[in-house]
Length: 56
Image (tube, rainbow, N blue to C red; front, side):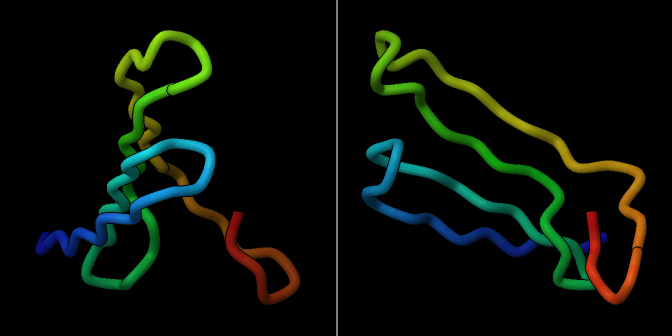
């Protein structure tokens, strides 16, 4: 699987990285929790399901 990355500056975290699969669906979200000491966090998206035209 090819992964595409997008870096976003600002928002709830100073720097956030979003990783998308070949199907352009979000697969991973990396960020630092600035309000809690800046520790690194990552969320992985698995078992994507479609319901009423929306992915969850």
